[in-house]
Amino acid sequence: MAGNSFGNIFKLTTYGESHGVSIGGIIDGCPSNIPLDLNLIQQELDRRKPGQSNIVTQRKESDIVQFKSGLFEGKTTGTPIAFEIVNADSKSKDYSHIKDVYRPSHADFTYQKKYANRDYRGGGRSSARETASRVVAGAIAKQLLKELKFTAYTSAVGNMQLNKDYPQLDFTNIEQNPVRCADLDLAKKMEDYIKQIRKEGDTIGGVITCVIQNIPVGLGEPVFDKLHADLGKAMLSINAVKGFEIGSGFEGTTMKGSEHNDLIQTNEQTSTNFSGGVQGGISNGMDIVFKVAFKPVATLMQKQKTINTTQTEVEMQGKGRHDPCVVPRAVPIVEAMAAMVILDHLLLHQARKNFRF
Image 1 (cartoon, rainbow, N blue to C red):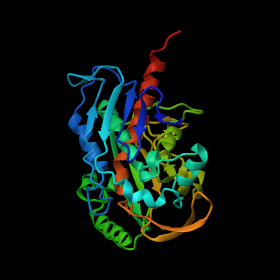
Image 2 (cartoon, rainbow, N blue to C red; image 1 turned 90 degrees about the vertical axis):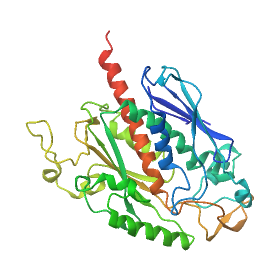
Image 3 (tube, rainbow, N blue to C red; image 1 turned 45 degrees about the vertical axis):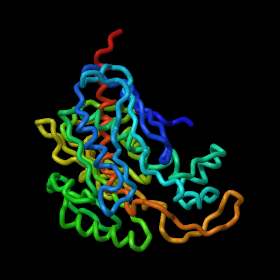
Image 4 (cartoon, rainbow, N blue to C red; image 1 turned 180 degrees about the horizontal axis):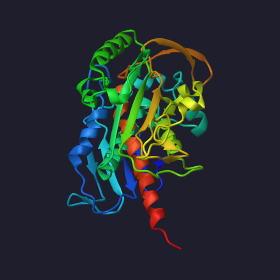
């Protein structure tokens, strides 16, 4: 199976399945002699872990990360950083009923056809449990990017949308509610709605907005390695993501050029930021702002028709512990992937500046 690595210089390779012994990864290309606060890394994992509130899956995992290499006396050594997170609360029996059944909108059918074999326990490698490894790498990237600030928050659940631009929001509200919405009044409505959806045995999708502040000018390349293209690839690699837009996004298609152009001022800042901080594939120094759309979780506690491995139509129903809405737990994953992309581009930028023929 290819496609288990992400990044060019700062590169993460992940391993493991949802119900395997453990998940984890190897980070290569991390600069040496960087002090790492392991508590901050664990705090990021705690934001993503299951069982943290009554609107997420009740699977109980401590998600304690154990570092195996690449650190000495609290600093990076420049060698590969290997880490492991043990799976402690997997209940594989919850999936025995779908051993030979393809769940609608899951990767079951495509995995079976591609590899002629699949781990049906919790989705195996296709499970969002893999994203815990990304959060570890992202937390390390954040510590190398101390001057930058990465803030993601829930801006929509179903039709409930946060109709405020981020300068109007108090980011300290985000971790004060289980939905991770920056508006406390709307957060309570979203929470109640998710609970209602769960009672119905159904699921709901939503949107996460991410803001990257204090970004330097010049990250990204103008053709195939555009900064926003790499951010888009990073976000679309997250489980359940169906859409990515930066700056004005799709709404920008309704505007005239005279309305959409970001006019440059004498301080080299732009009067508006419809570009979302990236122009011509290169960061322009303005805040990078993008949105990520998440579909409803595919596992329902309702009966659905599908087929099995013999192409026979059958009826199946989800069992076990699942998120009625993946968005609240995905907030730290979005931040992590954004940090990995920015660090990778920063290291590439520095390498090219220092290169001499």
